[in-house]
Length: 434
Image (cartoon, rainbow, N blue to C red):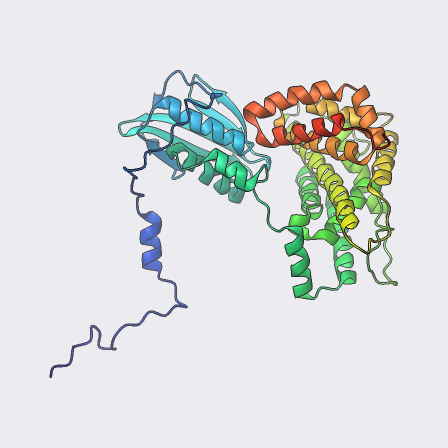
């Protein structure tokens, strides 16, 4: 009886599950996807009114290599632009379309700037996407959705149903509580770490360099987002932003832990100054000729609105959760926090009402939908928490402005549409004392 000869002198090769098979991985990564002939791409041009109508396509210039983030599609031009336009709306991407050059300048809520171009090739229409500015990780996330939309693999209705207006939600509140219990993290230590992180953000905000200030505001955006930092840290940071204080939160902390609230007051003043005066502190307003400084102030203004929207949302949801628990913690209610914030905001900005500023920002939804979306979120949180704020918003004509912004959101920006619907529902709801 003959014994089969092994394939190797070392004996039969067995695959170790702990070792990555790089050859198979790269073969799969660089292989061209096979077109599905039995399932043609869904046509949406008949159902969706596109915001983009290119008059013609340019050929790819000589010696111009297309980016790897591109796709060549053998389909009708009207169908491709309808897919891209609808994907931009569902992903809440601000798009400025050019019908002459068949290009689109895209800006996401994370201030990622992209350039989308359509080219005429022998194999069909080439759709190229380039990152011009912003986070590369966020760019690749949006790029994947847009390129899927180009070839017809992106279902806008399914995406909106699964993700809603939020593109990246990491943890829910229940999972966050389970993780905190699993890690065995002490509440006092978490409070101390939150205070240290806020003080670091304050140090960045007080620097003279614009990039340091931007980094400080981005840190506050993370600290006021419970999906990224946890409930306790977000609650502390939100109170610092709204009240300039971290006291009376009903949280466990060391009795010996002392901290100066002077930096917290400066953080709140900086946020209000950027939102209402478009400057930091007592500095003069930027000169229109200084383009670079103007761009930085525009980004800081957007980040300040995001910080305020996060803070108001945290306070609102925290009180709603407290009503469901059997042992609520003793702390200031959301109505008192919002009314104190409205009063302090008027004093800090020189008799400028924050509600009026937010409504004015919402009125610019056509040009700056991301800022308008954040303003609508702030207005909704303030009006739901305070009857005084809701009454004042009605006096300032918020209903008309919100309705106009809703029409813009329905056409181009899903997040803006959802936030405006919430504001309209709040403004039209009966008073609490009726």
